[in-house]
Length: 132
Image (cartoon, rainbow, N blue to C red; front, side, top):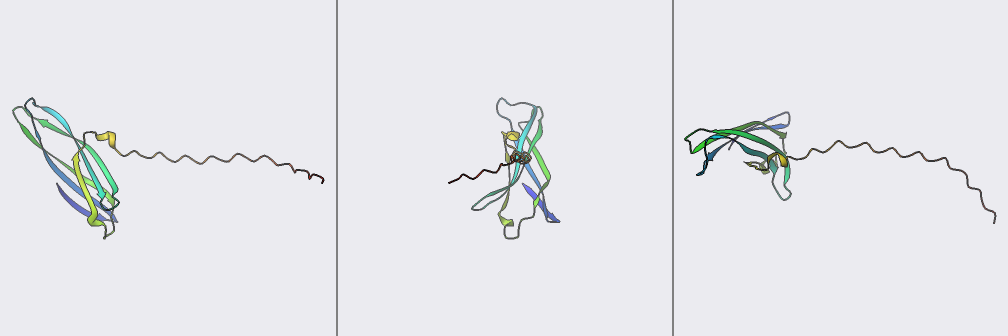
């Protein structure tokens, strides 16, 4: 894995690249497959905090007669707000295979529904006083 970082207007942008290798087993053969890669940024510490996650299906072609083939993937736009200077060393980039893939993408929260309007109060009638 290799990375480059820059900060512009308080936004950290990272360029992260990985290289992998597909090894064919005894029954493997030529063809195309998709490698499920996930990039994740986490602030590690006593209370780890998820920063971002990106999922990619990287196509890899395996030619006839090759028992292995290398692949590379580069994400040039991993962006998030620049962390405070005292926290920057606790930000970790993880890259790995994610066979569950898109099924585990963080769910987007639905837009909040407007609060229901309270029902109008019925006009109250004065209660007559009871004689004692």
